[in-house]
Image (tube, rainbow, N blue to C red; front, side, top):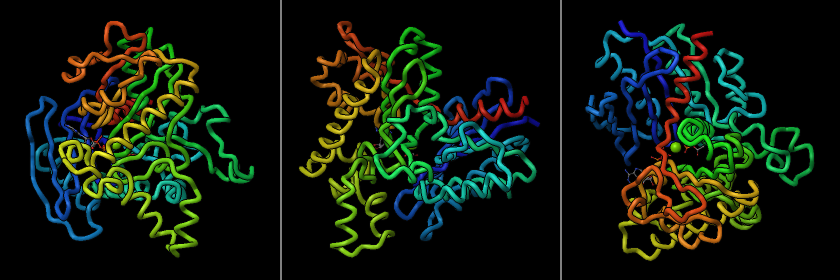
Length: 392
Ligand SMILES: Nc1ncnc2c1ncn2[C@@H]1O[C@H](COP(=O)(O)OP(=O)(O)O)[C@@H](O)[C@H]1O
Ligand SMILES: CC(=O)OP(=O)(O)O
Ligand SMILES: [Mg+2]
């Protein structure tokens, strides 16, 4: 009976999972994703060799998605790996607040602390907690480890950790946390292994997915991130606004009389690429559309990435490499091309033919800055943390 580690990565509209062997360097056995597609959910799972294990649709009733997704994952494991012995479950947890700076064994106190962090990440934390509870029911007495998106950024210098608000807010935990930390940790490790001379320098990583952020790495450590207190800040995302003048929120409250719940819904679910285009949160749909509003949404996304790139290069005091990752960063050559256009002054020059092939290194020979495309792997970072815990 194989002993396996299960990882769960519960996002706002998807649940990703993976199964790994238990050795010191975990090997992938199978992975998959449950996605919400309108009123349906789709589960697509593959063995490590890419062969499809299961590809099925499930009908959803309102508010049911995550419960259905977790059940579908546990059911798939029972059906397709009946001999598997799950020895530990690792979870991506988006917010760890000030205190959770390392992967942590979950007990009742940790779970209560995570519940208290829900207002900090309302689109993510409730689903992470739901995943922990669901796994606890399915795999009773199995250790569960929380791996936090925020941990990787907790060493930021004060100027990248604070808002210019009355000091008491900082003490209360109203800080610039930064997210996507598991993804950045994976990229930092991958760079250290493949290009140590680059990883010891100044690197900007652009994690461009449905959620999107960028991170400045100095010697492999995060020194700045575009995301702040919540997963709303920084870049525009699929449905999230990114950086916004707080006066707009006051306007919605005072002039439109909207409730905080209604404003939250607008900022998290109706804004970003979807809000500007009025069409879709999906970059593929926008790129292939002729609608002027879709073009404007892509223009705004590209513009904001370029602005943040400049800001992070200043925070780092220079730039040795730019790494693209996340669904858009890994697969959308046109978006990468548009971001890098006219960045020669910053030393960023890409080779168009390498870019359309999604090569690992898409820099032109003359480019002082290395431009790389590295598929992220948050699941492996979680599995490594779990394996470390199991080995004591
Ligand atoms: N194979 C692909 N080809 C082109 N675009 C893709 C591909 N996969 C994902 N994307 C784009 O990436 C975005 C989703 O990113 P992803 O990292 O998968 O999302 P999540 O943040 O939910 O993990 C979408 O805008 C989608 O258009
Ligand atoms: C923090 C965040 O935005 O996560 P995701 O990309 O999974 O939405
Ligand atoms: Mg993501």
